Length: 314
Image (cartoon, rainbow, N blue to C red):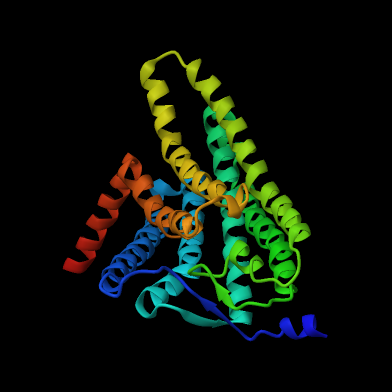
């Protein structure tokens, strides 16, 4: 009976970051700027891909899907971060907490699958250039994008539903959003079995996709090294460098949190690392894809020129 009473906790308390009051406004303004710029950068990529015919290719289709995902991904946790920086500890209902947990992990696992689809696109473009457009047809690219979303949101049901059914004895979540590890620490029972299930599900979504991406880039590397000229090799590498940078940033920060036991890491480490993959990675993605991409820069110039002509009128 006592355990059943613990499951009815209506409110969790997010402790956020422990900062001096004098630093909170600065941290809030900095995080707000990053959030706003993230939204603007990813929305800009979506509009560019839609507006410029030169970007109507499979690679930029997947990039626009990734940018659309990043808009929602960063919006899942950034508002909670801003509230915690402004007011310190913030209450959140248990229903809202579990919804945030589910959506955050669903979007994160969707990004894992989507990065795999983008690696497949680059593999086909470089290793099978003559058949690339027939292989990566509009139907296939839509199917790959849709499958990524379906797989991510389906896989996230398991850890989210298992966590939501736990009996909780404590209410203070040592994080700035509702994540798996800090919620598991509040449970009244031993969560070892749950951790194994979570690790298996998240491991399949992240680990298998990472191995898939590494395997595809192994094939890309072999194909590029066989190209006759240095210019051809440089061009091939340049089309993959942005994607490889994003993969390294996303997987590196995610693995550092979800691989291994949280008890072996210093207190507060997970919150800091979470800022990288939950806030900074979506912020850097449009920068990585635009500053290092000549086609995107040229598309921005063409679209800007058309906009200026429209504004001048007849």
